[in-house]
Image 1 (spheres, rainbow, N blue to C red):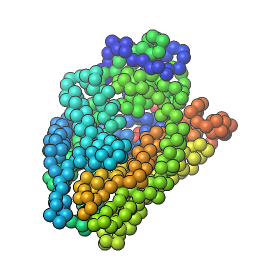
Image 2: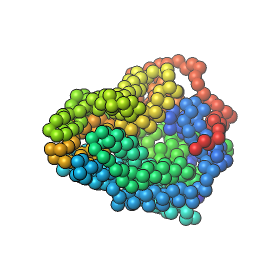
Image 3: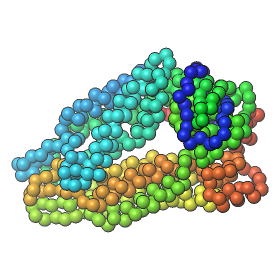
Image 4: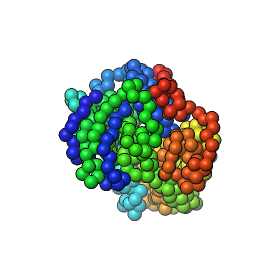
Length: 498
Protein backbone atom coordinates (compact mmCIF):
# COMPACT_ATOMS: atom_id res chain seq x y z
CA UNK A 1 0.00 0.00 0.00
CA UNK A 2 1.44 3.32 -1.07
CA UNK A 3 1.70 6.07 1.53
CA UNK A 4 2.87 9.64 1.50
CA UNK A 5 3.69 12.13 4.25
CA UNK A 6 3.25 15.37 2.35
CA UNK A 7 -0.48 16.13 2.31
CA UNK A 8 -1.28 19.10 4.55
CA UNK A 9 -4.33 20.03 2.49
CA UNK A 10 -6.92 17.72 4.05
CA UNK A 11 -9.39 19.38 6.38
CA UNK A 12 -13.07 19.32 7.32
CA UNK A 13 -15.17 22.31 8.34
CA UNK A 14 -17.65 20.19 10.31
CA UNK A 15 -15.26 18.16 12.43
CA UNK A 16 -16.15 17.80 16.11
CA UNK A 17 -14.22 20.00 18.58
CA UNK A 18 -11.16 18.42 20.13
CA UNK A 19 -7.99 16.94 18.69
CA UNK A 20 -8.03 13.95 16.37
CA UNK A 21 -4.45 12.78 16.70
CA UNK A 22 -4.44 9.45 14.96
CA UNK A 23 -6.33 7.51 12.29
CA UNK A 24 -5.50 3.89 11.53
CA UNK A 25 -6.48 2.46 8.16
CA UNK A 26 -7.59 -1.17 8.46
CA UNK A 27 -6.75 -3.28 5.42
CA UNK A 28 -8.70 -6.41 4.54
CA UNK A 29 -11.87 -5.00 6.11
CA UNK A 30 -15.01 -3.85 4.34
CA UNK A 31 -18.26 -2.31 5.50
CA UNK A 32 -21.43 -3.50 3.81
CA UNK A 33 -23.19 -0.45 2.30
CA UNK A 34 -26.53 -2.18 2.78
CA UNK A 35 -26.47 -3.17 6.45
CA UNK A 36 -23.30 -1.68 7.96
CA UNK A 37 -21.68 -5.01 8.87
CA UNK A 38 -17.87 -4.98 8.92
CA UNK A 39 -16.45 -8.11 7.32
CA UNK A 40 -13.08 -9.49 6.37
CA UNK A 41 -12.71 -9.20 2.60
CA UNK A 42 -10.27 -11.75 1.18
CA UNK A 43 -8.30 -11.30 -2.02
CA UNK A 44 -10.49 -12.35 -4.93
CA UNK A 45 -9.43 -14.26 -8.00
CA UNK A 46 -10.58 -13.09 -11.45
CA UNK A 47 -14.19 -14.08 -11.97
CA UNK A 48 -15.09 -14.11 -8.26
CA UNK A 49 -17.34 -11.79 -6.31
CA UNK A 50 -17.94 -11.35 -2.59
CA UNK A 51 -21.32 -10.73 -0.96
CA UNK A 52 -22.36 -9.71 2.54
CA UNK A 53 -23.08 -12.68 4.80
CA UNK A 54 -25.96 -10.82 6.45
CA UNK A 55 -27.95 -9.04 3.73
CA UNK A 56 -26.49 -10.38 0.48
CA UNK A 57 -25.23 -7.02 -0.81
CA UNK A 58 -22.40 -7.34 -3.31
CA UNK A 59 -19.18 -6.05 -1.73
CA UNK A 60 -16.55 -6.59 -4.43
CA UNK A 61 -15.81 -8.51 -7.57
CA UNK A 62 -12.82 -9.14 -9.80
CA UNK A 63 -13.35 -9.08 -13.56
CA UNK A 64 -11.97 -11.68 -15.92
CA UNK A 65 -11.31 -9.04 -18.56
CA UNK A 66 -8.25 -6.80 -18.85
CA UNK A 67 -8.66 -4.25 -16.04
CA UNK A 68 -7.88 -1.17 -18.16
CA UNK A 69 -7.76 -2.11 -21.83
CA UNK A 70 -11.29 -3.51 -21.98
CA UNK A 71 -13.16 -0.61 -20.33
CA UNK A 72 -11.00 1.86 -22.28
CA UNK A 73 -12.02 0.23 -25.57
CA UNK A 74 -15.70 0.43 -24.61
CA UNK A 75 -15.26 4.03 -23.43
CA UNK A 76 -13.71 5.11 -26.74
CA UNK A 77 -16.54 3.33 -28.56
CA UNK A 78 -19.06 5.18 -26.40
CA UNK A 79 -17.49 8.51 -27.32
CA UNK A 80 -17.66 7.66 -31.03
CA UNK A 81 -21.30 6.54 -30.84
CA UNK A 82 -22.25 9.62 -28.81
CA UNK A 83 -20.71 12.11 -31.24
CA UNK A 84 -22.23 10.31 -34.21
CA UNK A 85 -25.66 10.30 -32.54
CA UNK A 86 -25.48 14.05 -31.96
CA UNK A 87 -24.78 14.63 -35.64
CA UNK A 88 -27.50 12.25 -36.91
CA UNK A 89 -31.25 12.50 -37.29
CA UNK A 90 -33.48 10.78 -34.74
CA UNK A 91 -36.61 10.25 -36.84
CA UNK A 92 -38.59 11.76 -39.71
CA UNK A 93 -42.39 12.09 -39.71
CA UNK A 94 -44.34 12.40 -42.97
CA UNK A 95 -47.91 13.77 -42.64
CA UNK A 96 -49.69 14.11 -46.00
CA UNK A 97 -46.48 14.94 -47.80
CA UNK A 98 -45.17 17.35 -45.18
CA UNK A 99 -42.04 16.12 -43.43
CA UNK A 100 -40.29 17.03 -40.22
CA UNK A 101 -36.93 15.64 -39.11
CA UNK A 102 -35.67 15.92 -35.53
CA UNK A 103 -32.49 15.11 -33.66
CA UNK A 104 -31.47 14.74 -30.01
CA UNK A 105 -31.44 18.48 -29.38
CA UNK A 106 -34.86 19.20 -30.87
CA UNK A 107 -36.94 17.80 -28.00
CA UNK A 108 -35.38 19.82 -25.16
CA UNK A 109 -35.38 22.96 -27.32
CA UNK A 110 -39.07 22.63 -28.22
CA UNK A 111 -40.02 22.10 -24.58
CA UNK A 112 -38.21 25.30 -23.66
CA UNK A 113 -39.82 27.09 -26.61
CA UNK A 114 -43.27 26.10 -25.30
CA UNK A 115 -42.48 27.57 -21.89
CA UNK A 116 -41.58 24.35 -20.06
CA UNK A 117 -37.97 25.30 -19.49
CA UNK A 118 -37.56 23.13 -16.40
CA UNK A 119 -38.57 20.00 -18.28
CA UNK A 120 -36.45 20.94 -21.29
CA UNK A 121 -33.37 21.46 -19.15
CA UNK A 122 -33.98 18.16 -17.36
CA UNK A 123 -34.36 16.17 -20.59
CA UNK A 124 -31.29 17.80 -22.12
CA UNK A 125 -29.25 17.26 -18.97
CA UNK A 126 -29.94 13.53 -18.60
CA UNK A 127 -29.87 12.59 -22.29
CA UNK A 128 -27.16 14.88 -23.71
CA UNK A 129 -25.06 16.55 -21.02
CA UNK A 130 -24.77 13.75 -18.42
CA UNK A 131 -23.70 11.03 -20.91
CA UNK A 132 -21.06 13.34 -22.39
CA UNK A 133 -19.62 14.24 -18.99
CA UNK A 134 -19.75 10.60 -17.84
CA UNK A 135 -17.84 9.43 -20.92
CA UNK A 136 -15.27 12.21 -20.47
CA UNK A 137 -14.83 11.41 -16.78
CA UNK A 138 -14.42 7.70 -17.48
CA UNK A 139 -11.82 8.36 -20.17
CA UNK A 140 -9.85 10.59 -17.78
CA UNK A 141 -10.08 7.97 -15.01
CA UNK A 142 -8.79 5.17 -17.22
CA UNK A 143 -5.93 7.28 -18.57
CA UNK A 144 -4.98 8.25 -15.01
CA UNK A 145 -5.18 4.62 -13.84
CA UNK A 146 -2.73 3.56 -16.54
CA UNK A 147 0.03 5.58 -14.86
CA UNK A 148 2.25 4.09 -12.17
CA UNK A 149 0.60 6.19 -9.46
CA UNK A 150 -2.88 7.65 -9.57
CA UNK A 151 -2.65 11.45 -10.02
CA UNK A 152 -4.00 13.76 -7.32
CA UNK A 153 -6.92 14.90 -9.48
CA UNK A 154 -8.12 11.40 -10.37
CA UNK A 155 -9.88 10.53 -7.07
CA UNK A 156 -12.16 13.55 -7.35
CA UNK A 157 -13.07 12.60 -10.91
CA UNK A 158 -13.85 9.01 -9.86
CA UNK A 159 -16.03 10.21 -6.96
CA UNK A 160 -17.92 12.61 -9.22
CA UNK A 161 -18.36 9.89 -11.85
CA UNK A 162 -20.12 7.69 -9.29
CA UNK A 163 -22.44 10.59 -8.41
CA UNK A 164 -23.13 11.61 -12.01
CA UNK A 165 -23.54 8.20 -13.68
CA UNK A 166 -27.13 7.56 -12.45
CA UNK A 167 -28.23 10.81 -14.12
CA UNK A 168 -27.15 9.49 -17.52
CA UNK A 169 -30.39 7.90 -18.77
CA UNK A 170 -29.56 6.74 -22.27
CA UNK A 171 -31.13 3.32 -21.68
CA UNK A 172 -34.40 4.90 -20.52
CA UNK A 173 -34.41 7.29 -23.47
CA UNK A 174 -34.30 4.33 -25.87
CA UNK A 175 -37.57 3.04 -24.42
CA UNK A 176 -39.04 6.54 -24.68
CA UNK A 177 -38.15 6.54 -28.38
CA UNK A 178 -39.82 3.15 -28.82
CA UNK A 179 -43.05 4.29 -27.13
CA UNK A 180 -43.11 7.50 -29.18
CA UNK A 181 -42.56 5.55 -32.39
CA UNK A 182 -45.50 3.23 -31.71
CA UNK A 183 -47.77 6.23 -31.10
CA UNK A 184 -46.64 7.94 -34.31
CA UNK A 185 -47.10 4.94 -36.61
CA UNK A 186 -50.89 5.19 -36.23
CA UNK A 187 -51.04 8.72 -37.62
CA UNK A 188 -48.32 8.97 -40.26
CA UNK A 189 -45.33 7.40 -41.91
CA UNK A 190 -42.28 7.34 -39.62
CA UNK A 191 -38.68 6.81 -40.68
CA UNK A 192 -36.26 5.93 -37.90
CA UNK A 193 -33.00 7.83 -38.20
CA UNK A 194 -29.48 6.51 -37.60
CA UNK A 195 -29.36 8.24 -34.21
CA UNK A 196 -31.74 5.63 -32.78
CA UNK A 197 -29.34 2.80 -33.59
CA UNK A 198 -26.37 4.84 -32.42
CA UNK A 199 -28.07 5.55 -29.09
CA UNK A 200 -28.79 1.85 -28.71
CA UNK A 201 -25.13 1.07 -29.32
CA UNK A 202 -24.16 3.84 -26.89
CA UNK A 203 -26.36 2.27 -24.22
CA UNK A 204 -24.60 -1.08 -24.64
CA UNK A 205 -21.06 0.30 -24.65
CA UNK A 206 -21.62 2.50 -21.59
CA UNK A 207 -23.09 -0.47 -19.72
CA UNK A 208 -20.13 -2.60 -20.81
CA UNK A 209 -17.70 0.07 -19.60
CA UNK A 210 -19.24 0.04 -16.13
CA UNK A 211 -19.42 -3.76 -16.09
CA UNK A 212 -15.74 -4.25 -16.93
CA UNK A 213 -14.39 -1.40 -14.78
CA UNK A 214 -12.65 -2.54 -11.58
CA UNK A 215 -12.77 0.50 -9.30
CA UNK A 216 -11.11 -1.30 -6.39
CA UNK A 217 -8.09 -1.97 -8.58
CA UNK A 218 -7.94 1.73 -9.42
CA UNK A 219 -8.14 2.74 -5.77
CA UNK A 220 -5.25 0.42 -4.98
CA UNK A 221 -3.09 2.59 -7.24
CA UNK A 222 -3.84 5.58 -5.02
CA UNK A 223 -1.53 6.29 -2.11
CA UNK A 224 -2.88 6.67 1.41
CA UNK A 225 -1.57 9.88 2.94
CA UNK A 226 0.37 9.24 6.13
CA UNK A 227 0.12 12.79 7.48
CA UNK A 228 -2.77 15.20 7.20
CA UNK A 229 -4.45 18.01 9.09
CA UNK A 230 -7.86 18.48 10.62
CA UNK A 231 -9.80 21.54 11.69
CA UNK A 232 -7.80 23.89 13.88
CA UNK A 233 -4.56 23.08 12.03
CA UNK A 234 -4.12 19.93 14.11
CA UNK A 235 -1.91 17.20 12.74
CA UNK A 236 -3.53 13.83 12.09
CA UNK A 237 -1.28 10.83 11.63
CA UNK A 238 -2.45 8.02 9.38
CA UNK A 239 -0.96 4.54 9.37
CA UNK A 240 -1.94 1.22 7.83
CA UNK A 241 -2.43 -2.22 9.37
CA UNK A 242 -4.17 -5.40 8.24
CA UNK A 243 -7.12 -6.79 10.17
CA UNK A 244 -5.44 -10.22 10.37
CA UNK A 245 -2.56 -8.67 12.30
CA UNK A 246 -4.53 -6.73 14.93
CA UNK A 247 -7.94 -8.37 15.18
CA UNK A 248 -11.24 -6.53 15.11
CA UNK A 249 -11.16 -2.96 16.53
CA UNK A 250 -14.13 -1.68 18.54
CA UNK A 251 -17.05 -1.38 16.17
CA UNK A 252 -18.08 2.10 17.29
CA UNK A 253 -14.55 3.35 16.49
CA UNK A 254 -14.76 2.29 12.84
CA UNK A 255 -15.84 4.35 9.86
CA UNK A 256 -15.80 3.58 6.13
CA UNK A 257 -15.53 6.03 3.26
CA UNK A 258 -18.62 5.72 1.07
CA UNK A 259 -16.64 6.78 -2.02
CA UNK A 260 -13.57 4.52 -2.04
CA UNK A 261 -14.46 1.98 0.68
CA UNK A 262 -11.42 2.69 2.87
CA UNK A 263 -12.02 1.62 6.50
CA UNK A 264 -10.43 3.60 9.29
CA UNK A 265 -10.26 3.32 13.08
CA UNK A 266 -10.38 6.42 15.25
CA UNK A 267 -9.18 6.75 18.82
CA UNK A 268 -12.70 7.57 20.01
CA UNK A 269 -16.27 6.48 19.21
CA UNK A 270 -17.49 7.87 15.90
CA UNK A 271 -20.59 10.06 15.86
CA UNK A 272 -23.31 9.53 13.29
CA UNK A 273 -24.06 13.25 13.18
CA UNK A 274 -20.73 14.91 12.45
CA UNK A 275 -18.22 14.77 9.66
CA UNK A 276 -15.28 12.58 10.66
CA UNK A 277 -12.83 14.27 8.33
CA UNK A 278 -11.43 13.88 4.85
CA UNK A 279 -10.58 10.45 3.49
CA UNK A 280 -6.78 10.10 3.19
CA UNK A 281 -7.18 8.21 -0.09
CA UNK A 282 -9.94 9.87 -2.12
CA UNK A 283 -10.20 13.22 -0.30
CA UNK A 284 -13.96 12.83 0.06
CA UNK A 285 -15.71 13.98 3.22
CA UNK A 286 -16.35 11.00 5.46
CA UNK A 287 -19.51 10.51 7.49
CA UNK A 288 -20.33 7.36 9.41
CA UNK A 289 -23.86 7.62 8.02
CA UNK A 290 -25.35 9.89 5.38
CA UNK A 291 -26.07 13.21 7.12
CA UNK A 292 -29.71 13.92 8.02
CA UNK A 293 -30.78 10.82 6.11
CA UNK A 294 -34.23 10.37 7.64
CA UNK A 295 -35.06 14.08 7.57
CA UNK A 296 -34.01 14.58 3.96
CA UNK A 297 -35.73 11.43 2.75
CA UNK A 298 -38.96 12.42 4.50
CA UNK A 299 -38.85 15.92 3.01
CA UNK A 300 -38.30 14.62 -0.52
CA UNK A 301 -41.09 12.06 -0.12
CA UNK A 302 -43.58 14.68 1.07
CA UNK A 303 -42.70 16.89 -1.89
CA UNK A 304 -43.06 13.92 -4.26
CA UNK A 305 -46.52 13.13 -2.88
CA UNK A 306 -47.58 16.75 -3.40
CA UNK A 307 -46.54 16.63 -7.07
CA UNK A 308 -47.86 13.10 -7.61
CA UNK A 309 -51.48 14.25 -7.35
CA UNK A 310 -51.43 16.84 -10.19
CA UNK A 311 -49.12 14.56 -12.21
CA UNK A 312 -51.96 12.03 -12.45
CA UNK A 313 -54.93 14.42 -12.56
CA UNK A 314 -53.71 16.92 -15.16
CA UNK A 315 -52.97 16.11 -18.82
CA UNK A 316 -49.33 15.46 -19.62
CA UNK A 317 -49.80 16.37 -23.29
CA UNK A 318 -52.40 17.57 -25.79
CA UNK A 319 -52.70 15.82 -29.15
CA UNK A 320 -54.57 17.65 -31.92
CA UNK A 321 -55.27 16.29 -35.42
CA UNK A 322 -57.38 18.02 -38.06
CA UNK A 323 -58.94 20.21 -35.41
CA UNK A 324 -59.88 17.31 -33.14
CA UNK A 325 -58.26 15.75 -30.12
CA UNK A 326 -57.54 16.78 -26.57
CA UNK A 327 -55.45 16.27 -23.47
CA UNK A 328 -54.16 12.92 -22.28
CA UNK A 329 -53.23 11.93 -18.75
CA UNK A 330 -50.69 9.21 -17.99
CA UNK A 331 -53.44 6.67 -17.32
CA UNK A 332 -55.27 7.59 -20.51
CA UNK A 333 -52.06 7.11 -22.49
CA UNK A 334 -51.64 3.58 -21.12
CA UNK A 335 -55.30 2.78 -21.83
CA UNK A 336 -54.97 4.07 -25.39
CA UNK A 337 -52.05 1.72 -26.04
CA UNK A 338 -54.09 -1.17 -24.61
CA UNK A 339 -57.09 -0.37 -26.83
CA UNK A 340 -54.84 -0.19 -29.89
CA UNK A 341 -53.66 -3.73 -29.18
CA UNK A 342 -50.21 -2.79 -27.92
CA UNK A 343 -50.69 -4.65 -24.67
CA UNK A 344 -47.01 -5.25 -23.76
CA UNK A 345 -46.19 -1.60 -24.38
CA UNK A 346 -49.25 -0.50 -22.41
CA UNK A 347 -48.15 -2.63 -19.47
CA UNK A 348 -44.63 -1.18 -19.71
CA UNK A 349 -45.93 2.40 -19.59
CA UNK A 350 -48.36 1.57 -16.79
CA UNK A 351 -45.62 -0.10 -14.74
CA UNK A 352 -42.92 2.52 -15.31
CA UNK A 353 -45.06 5.66 -15.10
CA UNK A 354 -47.77 4.72 -12.60
CA UNK A 355 -46.79 1.67 -10.57
CA UNK A 356 -43.10 2.44 -10.02
CA UNK A 357 -43.52 5.99 -8.62
CA UNK A 358 -46.37 4.89 -6.36
CA UNK A 359 -44.54 1.82 -5.06
CA UNK A 360 -41.33 3.79 -4.67
CA UNK A 361 -43.03 6.40 -2.50
CA UNK A 362 -44.83 3.70 -0.49
CA UNK A 363 -41.69 1.58 -0.04
CA UNK A 364 -39.45 4.45 1.05
CA UNK A 365 -42.21 5.73 3.32
CA UNK A 366 -42.50 2.29 4.93
CA UNK A 367 -38.74 2.06 5.45
CA UNK A 368 -38.60 5.54 6.99
CA UNK A 369 -41.56 4.73 9.26
CA UNK A 370 -39.99 1.45 10.39
CA UNK A 371 -36.71 3.22 11.12
CA UNK A 372 -38.38 6.00 13.09
CA UNK A 373 -39.97 3.35 15.30
CA UNK A 374 -36.91 1.12 15.63
CA UNK A 375 -38.57 -1.90 14.01
CA UNK A 376 -36.45 -5.05 14.20
CA UNK A 377 -38.26 -7.28 11.71
CA UNK A 378 -37.84 -7.85 7.98
CA UNK A 379 -34.44 -6.14 7.88
CA UNK A 380 -33.05 -8.25 5.05
CA UNK A 381 -36.27 -7.84 3.06
CA UNK A 382 -36.24 -4.08 3.59
CA UNK A 383 -32.62 -3.84 2.51
CA UNK A 384 -33.28 -5.82 -0.65
CA UNK A 385 -36.39 -3.76 -1.33
CA UNK A 386 -34.30 -0.61 -1.08
CA UNK A 387 -31.90 -1.95 -3.70
CA UNK A 388 -34.83 -2.62 -6.05
CA UNK A 389 -36.28 0.85 -5.44
CA UNK A 390 -32.91 2.44 -6.10
CA UNK A 391 -32.47 0.46 -9.31
CA UNK A 392 -35.85 0.99 -11.01
CA UNK A 393 -36.54 4.62 -10.11
CA UNK A 394 -35.02 6.15 -13.24
CA UNK A 395 -37.24 4.13 -15.58
CA UNK A 396 -40.21 6.34 -14.75
CA UNK A 397 -38.70 8.97 -17.06
CA UNK A 398 -40.05 7.03 -20.07
CA UNK A 399 -43.17 9.22 -20.36
CA UNK A 400 -41.18 12.44 -20.07
CA UNK A 401 -38.83 11.36 -22.85
CA UNK A 402 -41.72 10.18 -25.02
CA UNK A 403 -43.46 13.55 -24.71
CA UNK A 404 -40.27 15.45 -25.53
CA UNK A 405 -39.95 13.43 -28.75
CA UNK A 406 -43.61 13.84 -29.73
CA UNK A 407 -43.51 17.58 -29.05
CA UNK A 408 -40.44 17.85 -31.27
CA UNK A 409 -41.63 15.80 -34.24
CA UNK A 410 -45.42 16.46 -34.39
CA UNK A 411 -45.53 20.16 -35.30
CA UNK A 412 -47.75 20.59 -38.35
CA UNK A 413 -50.04 23.38 -37.11
CA UNK A 414 -53.72 22.47 -37.69
CA UNK A 415 -52.92 19.19 -39.42
CA UNK A 416 -51.31 17.60 -36.37
CA UNK A 417 -49.57 18.88 -33.28
CA UNK A 418 -48.52 17.74 -29.82
CA UNK A 419 -47.96 20.15 -26.95
CA UNK A 420 -46.76 19.46 -23.42
CA UNK A 421 -48.95 20.24 -20.42
CA UNK A 422 -48.48 20.91 -16.73
CA UNK A 423 -48.99 17.27 -15.80
CA UNK A 424 -45.74 16.37 -17.56
CA UNK A 425 -43.76 18.88 -15.50
CA UNK A 426 -45.37 17.63 -12.28
CA UNK A 427 -44.58 14.04 -13.21
CA UNK A 428 -40.95 14.90 -13.99
CA UNK A 429 -40.76 16.53 -10.56
CA UNK A 430 -42.09 13.32 -8.97
CA UNK A 431 -39.40 11.24 -10.68
CA UNK A 432 -36.58 13.58 -9.65
CA UNK A 433 -37.83 13.91 -6.07
CA UNK A 434 -38.17 10.15 -5.60
CA UNK A 435 -34.65 9.69 -6.99
CA UNK A 436 -33.33 12.23 -4.49
CA UNK A 437 -35.29 10.54 -1.71
CA UNK A 438 -33.73 7.16 -2.50
CA UNK A 439 -30.24 8.62 -2.73
CA UNK A 440 -30.72 10.44 0.59
CA UNK A 441 -31.79 7.32 2.46
CA UNK A 442 -29.04 5.31 4.14
CA UNK A 443 -30.22 1.68 4.51
CA UNK A 444 -27.65 1.09 7.25
CA UNK A 445 -29.70 3.18 9.68
CA UNK A 446 -32.47 0.57 9.53
CA UNK A 447 -30.00 -1.87 11.08
CA UNK A 448 -28.76 0.80 13.51
CA UNK A 449 -32.32 1.47 14.67
CA UNK A 450 -32.87 -2.26 15.20
CA UNK A 451 -29.77 -2.47 17.39
CA UNK A 452 -27.90 -4.77 15.00
CA UNK A 453 -24.79 -2.62 14.53
CA UNK A 454 -23.67 -2.30 18.11
CA UNK A 455 -24.19 0.68 20.36
CA UNK A 456 -25.45 3.83 18.62
CA UNK A 457 -25.49 7.05 20.65
CA UNK A 458 -26.82 9.57 18.12
CA UNK A 459 -28.26 9.99 14.64
CA UNK A 460 -31.52 8.16 15.44
CA UNK A 461 -34.88 9.32 16.83
CA UNK A 462 -34.70 9.87 20.63
CA UNK A 463 -37.31 7.19 21.28
CA UNK A 464 -35.22 4.63 19.39
CA UNK A 465 -32.04 5.58 21.25
CA UNK A 466 -33.87 5.35 24.58
CA UNK A 467 -35.31 1.95 23.69
CA UNK A 468 -31.87 0.66 22.72
CA UNK A 469 -30.38 1.93 25.98
CA UNK A 470 -32.96 0.01 28.03
CA UNK A 471 -33.19 -3.06 25.81
CA UNK A 472 -31.73 -6.20 27.33
CA UNK A 473 -29.24 -7.93 25.02
CA UNK A 474 -30.49 -11.12 23.49
CA UNK A 475 -29.66 -13.50 20.68
CA UNK A 476 -29.01 -11.72 17.40
CA UNK A 477 -27.83 -12.41 13.93
CA UNK A 478 -24.09 -12.49 13.33
CA UNK A 479 -22.55 -9.08 13.84
CA UNK A 480 -19.19 -7.65 13.00
CA UNK A 481 -17.85 -8.53 16.43
CA UNK A 482 -18.96 -12.16 16.75
CA UNK A 483 -18.15 -14.08 13.60
CA UNK A 484 -14.56 -15.20 13.96
CA UNK A 485 -11.45 -14.84 16.12
CA UNK A 486 -10.63 -11.56 14.40
CA UNK A 487 -14.18 -10.31 14.77
CA UNK A 488 -15.22 -10.57 11.16
CA UNK A 489 -16.80 -13.24 9.09
CA UNK A 490 -15.71 -14.38 5.67
CA UNK A 491 -17.90 -12.86 3.03
CA UNK A 492 -20.00 -15.06 0.78
CA UNK A 493 -17.95 -16.12 -2.23
CA UNK A 494 -19.48 -17.00 -5.57
CA UNK A 495 -18.61 -16.85 -9.28
CA UNK A 496 -19.04 -13.50 -10.96
CA UNK A 497 -21.80 -13.84 -13.52
CA UNK A 498 -21.28 -10.41 -15.08
